[in-house]
Amino acid sequence: AYLSTHRDVSYSAAAVGRVPVAIGSRRLRIVVTGGAGFVGSHLVDKLIGRGNEVIVIDNFFTGRKENLVHLFGNPRFELIRHDVVEPILLEVDQIYHLACPASPVHYKYNPVKTIISFFFSFICMIYKTNVMGTLNMLGLAKRIGARFLLTSTSEVYGDPLEHPQKETYWGNVNPIGERSCYDEGKRTAETLTMDYHRGAGVEVRIARIFNTYGPRMCLDDGRVVSNFVAQAIRKQPLTVYGDGKQTRSFQYVSDLVHGLVALMDGEHVGPFNLGNPGEFTMLELAQVVKETIDSSATIEYKPNTADDPHMRKPDISKAKELLNWEPKVPLREGLPLMVNDFRNRILNEDEGKGM
Ligand code: NAD
Ligand code: UDP
Ligand code: UDP
Picture 1: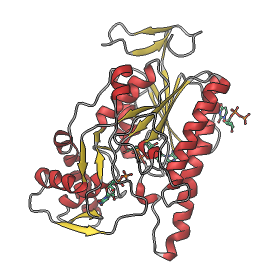
Picture 2: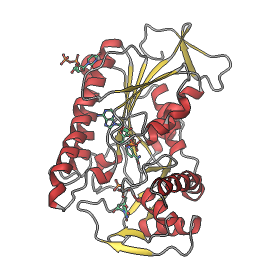
Picture 3: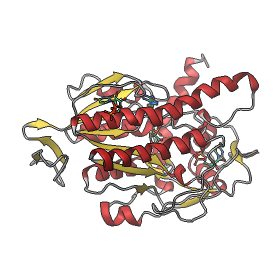
Picture 4: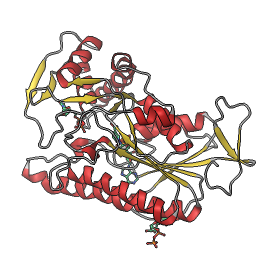
């Protein structure tokens, strides 16, 4: 049965592939926390596009209204400015819980003393959002019998000693390091999710998301893809940290959105790795960015951050088998799809500065 067993879910006859659109005569109502962010806003587009009612909860910490402005005025869309650290009362069928300041620049240690306390309050906020925010959304799901999906992360594997990473791997995480607030925050969020599932019967889903890129990414949040693309467009050198031989696997955002929806609507709790197994060193990524945007771009080496995972690549056999999902967009096809969006936003920024 879809959702709680006592519910009678019908499928829109018009919908392709039996997409859940309604419960009885009522449309499926879905909350997306963090829906004004990069991934969230693409997910919201997908859900609105298939006929659902969508309520976004976001405090705009790293998200932007611009990501959703095209939906303003749509009667099936609602945006609530709210911090998930505070309780909230709503009546919905599904909760996609994405809220979390996900940008590394916000949690990696910054050595400039005057802003350490500023960064300290960011770090506390990341941990609080992961723990108290997740607890509140689980409490909400429990009260109303909604299905809850957590967007966890490949960071729960830490600096992995197993390669590629399977969901059965428990990880290699430093509990007291500079990025621990994020890694351990998500690990705790996974723990709470499974506790509410086992202890309170909440229907839950857990996705472990690997590095994802695409249009609407924050311009200056310090992630490698957004950094390189913005740098190439601005004619600045591409900043490679360390020797550039560390690896990551980059997933285009539309593949992730398909995976999240397949997970939510399917019958399996997870956790599931959602990522693209194509693995690149940072130097190889810089090369693809050069080929895509500016072949004359140069590289500038900078010191790496502490505890940086040496390699990361998802084993996605579980998602392939149980969700019938796998990514379709390779890096060389996906990167060009974000360039126009980045160009336009960089241009607008420059105009805003009177340049
Ligand atoms: P993002 O920063 O663009 O989006 C996060 C959204 O959450 C923002 O709109 C932000 O304003 C909102 N938010 C943060 N704290 C909040 C709070 N306390 N209350 C309400 N809203 C709050 O990041 P994203 O890349 O879209 O990430 C979405 C989710 O996916 C996150 O949970 C992140 O941990 C996870 N994830 C992303 C990646 C990736 O590569 N993008 C990788 C692994 C996991
Ligand atoms: N909660 C919420 N909305 C709800 C139900 C609960 O925000 O509709 C919050 C609630 O305030 C609490 C958390 O979710 O902080 C966990 O709720 P639960 O009922 O599981 O635990 P309790 O309230 O008993 O601590
Ligand atoms: N990185 C880099 N140059 C940058 C930003 C990041 O070489 O301008 C490296 C970083 O050291 C890490 C990898 O790129 O090894 C991925 O970093 P990101 O912050 O995007 O994601 P995460 O470390 O969370 O996987």
